[in-house]
Length: 259
View 1 (cartoon, rainbow, N blue to C red):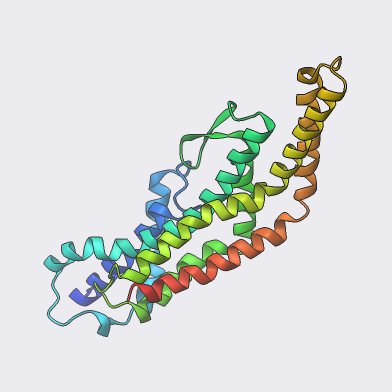
View 2 (view 1 turned 60 degrees about the horizontal axis):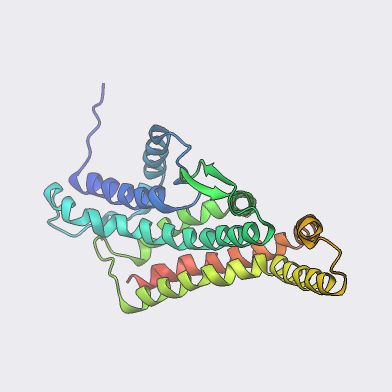
């Protein structure tokens, strides 16, 4: 029976790819879902690494590189996956922020659920908006973008050559500011109709003091808010398509900023 033998360069190549995939599994939406057992995520990372390893040319491994030199590379290589996953997580943080705003406007801010993805408490509408966004993300094959980003990094980023340059830091800071923008774009209609409802209820309370605004105000606000939320679902596919298309460009732009 023929024995399998691997060169040092092949082992190092596997380790480098595994570290980049592990960073994705730690931070990227869907892949970092805490409801998925850790054993399954580890197996998926190993299988993905086996599939992607041949894509990394052996000539990119520095000459004279030994197994003992892998340890200093650990943080450099895993940083790639963490940055790419963080970029996508910031977009989903904006979606969850929109849910927080909607919950606050409609009076559901005190009703929280345990989000199985992160094992932290989230408001009802944050939970809803996050899963709707994740559904559209998967329908757009967004989870493939991370694997494509890893494959693209083989030709752009040298082994151990990931650097935190000034453009990369500025890009991440700018992306973090998108949390507010995305949240307001999604929750803007609810905020508008909620404000209009409050103004109408205030005018009605002044014009007809005998009307108990506290009794009719909240049901009226809920009815108008849920109506606006239901109507906004019609426009969500285009909105999420715009948001995730921008994320697709950002992910591959970050790779160039790491060089």
